Image 1 (tube, rainbow, N blue to C red):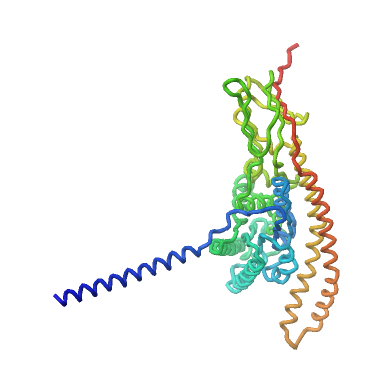
Image 2: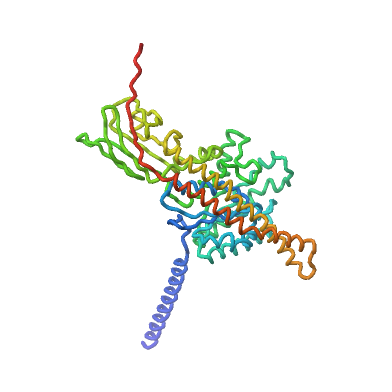
Length: 466
């Protein structure tokens, strides 16, 4: 009996130990799970927040960044954000580190989008050593972004168009042409893993460009969004802007207005994205006043193909108007006295979309915003970015000279001194460029404010036969 009692106690003790071990293990697993971060799903922004677009020549083009700015100028006209393009042609991740303090941290960003990798892969088949350099420099860059209290939004390198490269005049290594787009896919896949594990933002720039290209080549084998194989043209940059905004889950709809009649014949309305007033059903149509909260997102003429390919208006900027209980027939819609189109009563009952109609006053207002921002980016913003080219040359050469130790190349030492001399004027150029850019942005915020507009829908009377 004594043996059985001791045995029972031992079994109980073992059970308790096992239970404690399992509890400890489960607690450790739960703790580990709790440390996992959810990737950033959307940008939370308010007036005064700053966004820095960090990158290479594709950012230096001031195009996808411009179109993203256009979106915020028109979608949130009451919220004034600060945008800073920090792209430099030819930049690698190390170059971004070299100018980080003055070109990124100085703008106190809430978010920093990072588009680097195109140059880091060095336009050759995959190389472990080259990738390791990119890996180490990007990890340091991400750490610096976190160190200033900003959230990184990591973006995959864009597409390398091998067909465009083969058709171009520039001589390239055939193996690099065949494989480089795959190298960029590898780099982007790693970035996605970093973003997912660390709770950063992530934008897939690579897939939309590749997917649209292969779809369009089913109709036209010569199609490209990247004529030089590396730098997306304006339509391609619209694809990039849509990718960034889509992956960051911005507010997609401008407005939705639905008008109908109650059972007693009185007009009824449901509206999102603005304020509807003075609604009346007339003998031959409907009239009302509409004050929208925002404007449609439009892009300059040279970029419109990108808007069509991405269905930008429908997906990202819809202005929906639905009017029910109209007698059969066709109806003419005018806004502030400007005729914008004719629609059947059945089409109006389903809904019509106005965001892409260049005849509407709100579209024309939004285009003025886009053209002012185009002037801002092509002028002072690009002037500022060009000033950083000299710094990049200086930083690279100085790094090389410093690595030579006591046996320095005197010719290169002299070149460093010359570049340093040129940079004495950089702060002045930056300040003047930023002042000019702000002056244009002030004009944008005068133009981008929505105004109340009078809508008149009137039945079209058939012409009498003679």
